[in-house]
Length: 314
Length: 314
Image 1 (cartoon, rainbow over the protein chains, first blue to last red):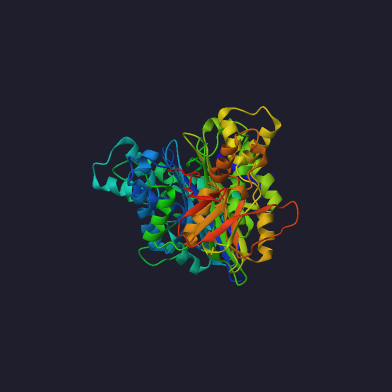
Image 2 (image 1 turned 90 degrees about the vertical axis):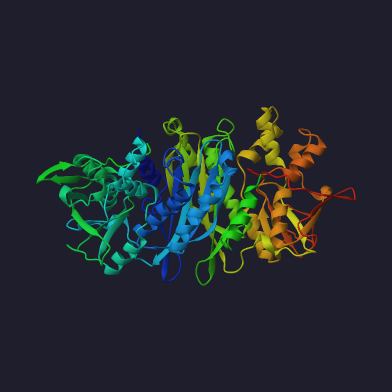
């Protein structure tokens, strides 16, 4: 079956869509700035379950996933629209008010203004489309396509926690405190706008993407866009410490490599080291190669091809 | 039950959302132009039925409804995003390709570039969110809120055809050629961008909205935003000629007053008459009053209050 990524590549080619395919589209705004814009659809029982989250957390996450796309361009968020389809039973509850409350909690923190959207009835389940617009100094948006062989590959924060939280929700395990940290990573992701801003001030990033589908898939997207390959080192991957003791070591690495929704930043630079002030954490996990489209995973000095196993809809 | 319009008013007040509530949000772009942006959600079995339309017509309509919002601001369309959730069975058919083909037919005609969006799986039914951005000379966007008592009220084209087409689809009647014209009005609406552009060149419009929910409701929205009322004359309403002979005269007037989705323009001006070159058709249907929130319908010299009976989700 063709994946959604295949469809998007096909549409890009068929209709000559030059601006499609990065975390945000970049459009000219004025003499000093470009505009960036992104849309993310969240579908009930595909992207979330109402009995695993609260309306506030869902509203919060709907905005967070789009803010993460803005961060991945090295841009700032300015305005947003929110379209939501809601079954009548939920409409007659507090759901919608609580959802917008949670959305606005995050919007206030990041100075985003709700300017529009749509409200519709839904016969089956909640569907949300989150649209965010932002801006970036002209010509400085960081695309997926700029990685060069020899560049170092870095990730912010830690990986696998959100997927670990999802696994706990799926199995109904939530007995220990460290489990609730993982579940919070799944339900209340933090967009890395401040981190992206700091990184951009260093001025040496060649490419960036946010980790939404999973490291193996998102590094694949970055390599494909850059016409390059990558070699990463298992022992350098910042596996979420909360996973240890809850999952076995192989599963922890698998969650960090292939689990989605950590919304950390994956980026490349010609620099070998990047230093950020505490509490910002950055890990160098490997390097870009000229091995077009191939991602190698090094484990104890042994290399194998890492297939993209992150989230896909189709 | 509270309507979606009640919710939007409540959100505007609760979160001080100054830009919410018109056909598009207006945002500063550069020294000479403002940006306009709009989002419209289309939900299967609420806004469309797959056995009544084709994938191409659905794609076409998804863009048309948003272009109509751009037209209602007196703006031009520039870019678009499209988010779509699709059940797996449809994903494995030609549906998605044909949908994007129909979308692009209209996009090419109006010079709109697809720059992004999202693709998701859906457990139940197709959901589309259509986002369009455009621009307008700074300070010249035509809002709903500018109507003044004494202004004339005009509509473009004819009304009731799209709702007549929907009624035929609902009852399975499509035996005569004139019926297929009505059905086409429902399935392939035309956004009135050229008409809006011509009207704007006249320079005397005080307010504008597109007729998406129905004349009674959309005139209500315009009056509420303007803090005014309206008196309209039944015999001046341009009832779609295709309705005659298919529906009885009372039903024809009801469809023109309360049927949605004609996507004609409803606007006000201090001018008593506005003349546009053929084939553009404009009808003066009444005048704005100081009777805040009240719409009077005059039938044979007798006035009654016209309640908003256009489409609402809740």
